[in-house]
Image (cartoon, rainbow, N blue to C red; front, side):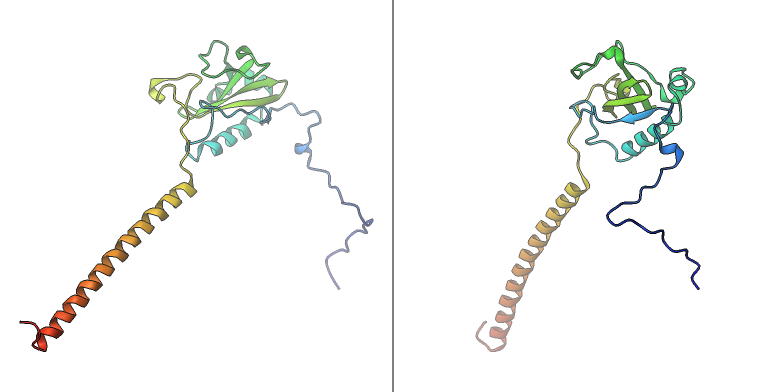
Length: 199
């Protein structure tokens, strides 16, 4: 006798839909949510070339912010996030159409990790720029205003290492071939010497 209950009967051609846990519903949600549909990757605001931990730190910050309401975020009680308006900031990029600097806000990821910039509409934060290099508020302590450099990816590093190793193998094969030719000549000279053909 089986302890597993029989599966409920299914109507052919239908997909059973399960109701998600309450915390995953949007109905009456007051806490902050994030959207990346307005994200722009520019020469000053980008993830290319940043520490591989930055994206994880950003997502952890977003997760923490998502536990709070707009009122809590705006009150300043979440000091580590330094949520504030960007009005008056020395913006190095052209603003997206329909967006004014006075409407944009920053959420800080960490003291030395920059932040994200976007627009808060009700409880939805539209992320526009990722700022790991502090380019919205350039500071000489963090390297000043810097354009994002193309990243060295794990594949690029691997490919470069493979190329260097292939060149080394080719050089060693050439050295081995020359050494074998010298050994052959030396062996022939010894054979000639032993047979009296070489003085």
